[in-house]
Amino acid sequence: MTLNRQHMRGALGQGASILVTLFGLLILTFVIGRIMPTDPVRAIVGEDATQEVYMNVYQELGLDKPMWQQFFLYLRDLATGDFGTSIRTGKPVIQDILHALPATIELATFAIIIGACLGVPLGVMAAVKKDRWQDHVIRVFSLMGHSMPIFWTGMIGLLVFYASLGWVGGSGRMSQFYIGMVPDRTGFLLIDSAVAGQWDVFRSALRHIILPAALLGYSSSAYITRMTRSFMLDQINQEYVTTARVKGLSQRQTIWRHAFANIRVQLVTIVALAYGALLEGAVLIETVFAWPGFGQYLTSSLRIGDMNAVMTCVLIVGLIFITLNIISDILYRVFDPRTR
Amino acid sequence: MTEERPMLDVKNLSVRYRGTDTPAVRDVSFTLGRERLGIVGESGSGKSTVGRALLKLLPTAELTADRMRFEEVDLLTAPERKMLELRGQRMSMILQDPKFSLNPIQRCGLQIAEAYRTHVRCSKGEARAKAIEMLSAVQIRDPERVFDLYPHEVSGGMGQRIMIAMMLLADPGLVIADEPTSALDVTVRLKVLRILDGLVREKGIGLIMISHDLSLVRSFCDRVLIMYAGRVVETLAARDLDNARHPYTQGLLAAQPRIGGSRDELPVLERKDSWLEPAEERP
Image 1 (cartoon, rainbow over the protein chains, first blue to last red):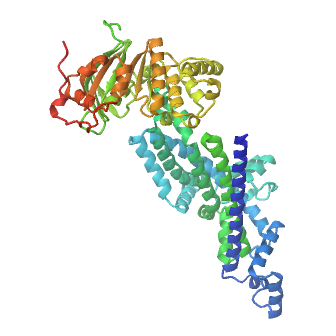
Image 2: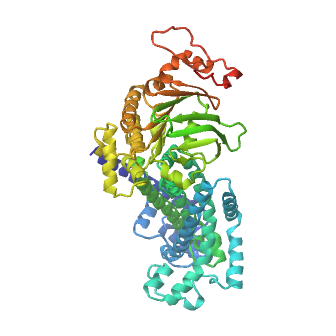
Image 3: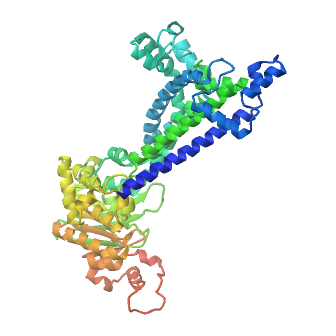
C-alpha cells in the first residue's frame, strides 16, 4: 500500500518534471524565433512589397501584440498542429520534418545497434583483460573511432567499399532506379519496402544504409566501449564479485551474471545519450552520403534563416531527448531494485 | 582431528602481488583438521591474503609454496576447472561486509540458491526449497519473505546470516571466515558468531576465522595463528593465548582495554625488527 503510494508519487513527480521541461523547451524555441536577426514578414511578402502589404502581414502574424500574447498564440498554433510554413519548400514545416525524420531515425537506430553490439562486448573484454594486449588493441581501436572525423571516414568508406570494391550502395537511401517505387507508409524505407513486398528495394536500401550506419556505429562504439570498460572496472573490484567467485561461478558467469548486470543502468544512460546525439547530429554523414535526413534539413533551414523550420527542429530535438530520458528512467526501474 | 592426515596442509606459502617487491605473505605453514583455527594480525599483516590464496582468488598475485594441499587436491597445481568445482562446494568463504558482498540487484534468496545450483543439477523449486531451509538454519524467522528481499532491504546482521547460509549451503569441508563480524554492530556480532559456530560444529566443518579481535578468536577458536608482517610469528592453542611468548602477541594482548581494568593510557606497540623471528616452539 505504502509502496503503491510511493510509486504514484514518483510517477506524478516525474510527470510534473516532464511538463516543466516541456514548457521550458517551448519558451526556448519561441525565444529563438524572436531573437533571430531575420524578418519573418519580409520573408513572406518579399523584397518588393509595399508598406501597406507589409503591415497587413505584420498584423496577421500577431507581431504587433505584446510578447506574452504572441507566446500564447504560438502555443495555440502548436496545439492545433500548425507549426508554420517553410519559406524554403513552401510546404508545412511539420510535413517536411515528418519526411526527413524517419530517414534519420532509421540510420541512427541502425547505427546505435551496431555501436552497442560492438562497444559493449569490447568494453567488457577490455575491462576483464585490463592491461593485457587485448585491452591495448581495443583501446587503440576505440580511440581511432573517436578521433577520425566522420566526414573523412565517410568519404574513405565510399571510396573503398563503394567505388573500389562495390560491396555497398553509394549515396542516397536507395538506387536512383527505385525512387518512387515504394509507397510512403511510415517513411522508414526498410519497413515500407518489406511491407510492400518489394524485396529489390529492400536490398538496395540495406546496401545503402549499411555503410553510413556502420561508420556512425563505429564512432559511437568508441564512446560506448570506453564507458563500458570503466563501468566494468568499477564493478570487478567489488566484493560481491568475489562472493560469486567463491560460490564457484566461472569467470564468464561472474562477469555477465553479476558484474555486467550491475552496469546496465549506467549503460542505458550512455547508450541513450549516444542515440540522441546520432538523431540530432548526423549532419556530416548525411551530407557525405546525400542522406535526406533531419540533420540536413535543419542545417539547410538554419543557413537561409527559415525560422519556422528551425524552431520546430529544435522542438523535435528537445522532444527526442525528453523521450529518451523517460525511457531511461523506466529502464532504471527495471534494472535496479533500489530505484523502485 | 585426524592427526595423520589433516584436511588442509600448507607449507611455506608465499604470496607476492604483481608489481610489488615484498611479498604480502611469506613462508606461512599450518595444517587444519576439523577444527576452528583463528588467524589474527593487524591490518596489512597478510591474514586475508592467506584466506584468498587458499581459494586461489588472487589473479594478480604469484603463489609459491612447498605444499598446499586440501584433502586429496594439490591446490598449487589444480587447474581453474578443478578450483571451480572446489569453490562453493568443498571450500567457501564468508566475506566481511554484507553491504558489499551481496549483489545489490539480485534477490537474496536467488543468490543463495545460485550457490546450490552451481554445483547441483536441480530444478529452481528444489534450489529455492534448499535455500529457504538454509535460511531457517541461520535462524531467520520468516525465510519465505527474506528470500524475496533485496540486499538493501535487510539489516547487516541479517545480511551476514544470508552470507553464511549461502556459503554453508553446499556442505563444504572448509570455510574461511574473513572478518565475518567486523562490519556488524556489537550487539549482533555474538549472535551471528554463535549461529556460525553452531553450524560449523554440527556439520563438522573446518573453520579458518580471520580476525583482528583477540577476544572473539579466544572464545570461538581452538587454535590461533598470530601473523605479523606477512609471517606467522606464533601458533598456540586459544586457551593459552594469555601465555603467549612472542613479544608482538604479548603487545597485542597488553593493548586491549579491559572492563574494570586500569584507566591509564593503553600501551602502544613498540615494534622491533626481531619480531619477524617466530617464537620458539613450545615443548
